[in-house]
Each structure stands twice: as structure tokens, then as C-alpha cells.
Image 1 (cartoon, rainbow, N blue to C red):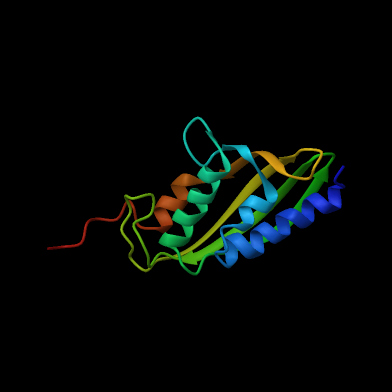
Image 2 (tube, one colour; image 1 turned 90 degrees about the horizontal axis):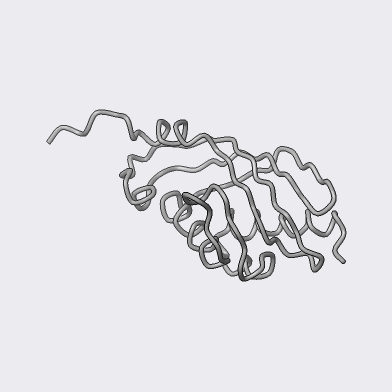
Length: 146
């Protein structure tokens, strides 16, 4: 059985290697194949492949994405991380809809990850302010003049 400290170490590796450096295969080390992700898509999504694709899309939109965990709360088999995501939208359109305008992003969020006995994440709840994200990326700005 994994300890709470081992679970946190798994997440620290995920944040640094996967989110910050783009080594997407680290996801396979820390999450079960049928991982359930709430907050990354409507009604939740199942599967580690969905999680990997979600991270790929974030990094494709913001190649310099860097996530810093501000606080950790560990209780039993759950780890809460309060984070700040920073990056510059210079890549692909965000979520396929918001074109890159070179805008800098600084956005707080919270994730609750639940671990199984083997120390793998099997369910995650992700929360950010989507309106703040869209505003920072310029989704509500007037279109560029032709």
C-alpha cells in the first residue's frame, strides 16, 4: 500500500515532468488505465489516454506552460493540490476555439486526486475559473480588423 507521501511524490513528478516539461508518458506511471477525470471535459471522461490528450492540448496551446503547486493537502488516499498555471498562448487555438494572441496567462486552480492501494491515481476532480481563463486569452475581445 502506498503512503500519502508516496502519493504526493507521484503528483510532484507528474507536475514537473508531464505538465512542465511535456513528457506525456509520465502519465502512465501515475494513473490507472481507466482513470476518471472530472473537469477536463463535460460529464467527466474515462481513461488515461483522455488525460494524456488533455495535457497535450494545454501544452500545444501554451508551449511554455508551467504549473506551480502552492499548497498540498493530504488526507488518506486523497491529495489536494492548489496550483497556479502560467504560460503564453502562442501555439494552437485554445480548445480549438480561441486563437493564439501571445497573451500571458496566470490562473489558479485546484485538483483533488484519489489514489488506489498501489499508489496510482484512479479519479481526479479539476477546477479552474473558465471565465477567467477565457478572458485572459482574449476570447471576449473584439475580433481583429480585416
